[in-house]
Length: 288
Image 1 (cartoon, rainbow, N blue to C red):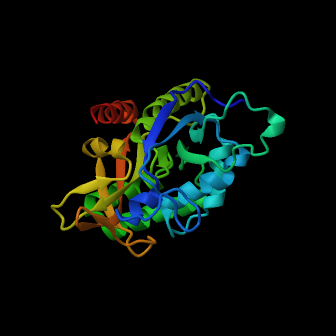
Image 2 (image 1 turned 30 degrees about the horizontal axis):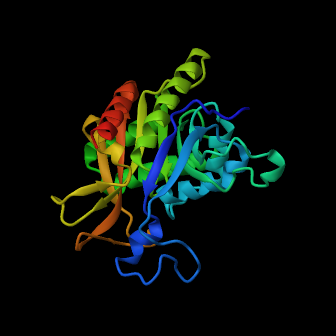
Image 3 (image 1 turned 45 degrees about the vertical axis):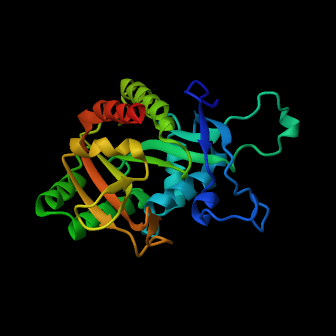
């Protein structure tokens, strides 16, 4: 299958992750390993493409950002994402069209910078990694949600007449939120095409896990790792937060003199609101 190259290409102007973590005092623009850590802008072009077999390890690594140390077979989940590559995209760096294939020994497999897709966890409920996701969602709800939300999660995951879509929206730290707009627009079109072919992508419910950081007590600011997801909370039927401090490599990140505690916000939506969610996502990006 050919790569999708008709999605919007954006520029990335951002500092390296090493620079953000290393502080303001530097004796050189390069660290002891020879990696650039200066304050110059780095620019790169990215595009969305069909997930392919060569993207397996990159997708798996991105999934680890979301699931951390949860009991989910991320390799098997990556294989599902690749197997349904007619729905969803990976973010990869644009290659120079002038490069000859013979000169390009790397097929791009090392450069997966993001993944956006949705998986039918009702239709695929017998697949082991999907069973693990369903068990994880039930356990997280029972341990962290209020009674109404617990009942809702248990209901939609035990009633096989209700098709549930699990949305995955992951990317590496410095890829800006603007990339999410063309990716979700493409996903929207791909789902419409799949539905016209009677494929199982009509969802009664959607479950979306967001990476968030809390800066203090319950009334303090909540920061979204993917900024475009922030306005979606108000559209959710129900939601609950999960503290993942014990699973994260860094329990807290410095933030303007304070600290950020890593959490996950689980959102449940009516499936019919998917187009509305994409509209809100786009508005959030354009307002920044």
